Length: 105
Image (cartoon, rainbow, N blue to C red; front, side, top):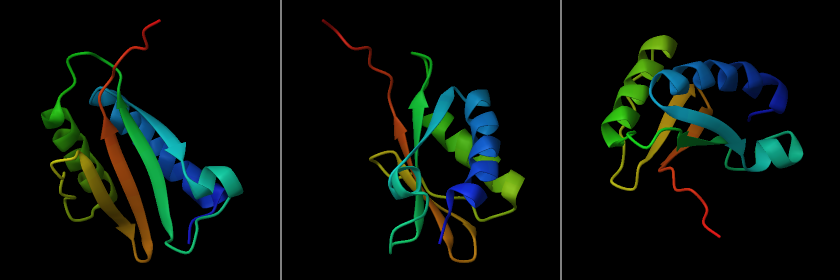
């Protein structure tokens, strides 16, 4: 189970990695809303493309850097640009890589 307290150091580390690969990282889901994970026990993060040139290959490189930093198995990027990152025993991150689309009036 995740708490906001134990999630924040991980999120900060992922923000640094994400920036290097063209993504801003945002916490969402139950940990943000209630301070702890739901029964599923995952940490929900959005990796939002911060530059128009960011592609799925950037997401794959980002996942590789995460695997290297935390010494974990390389997470697989799905065709929908999501990934389950098993960061440690019993703690999973659900990552969604999102394309940048500006709002229009």
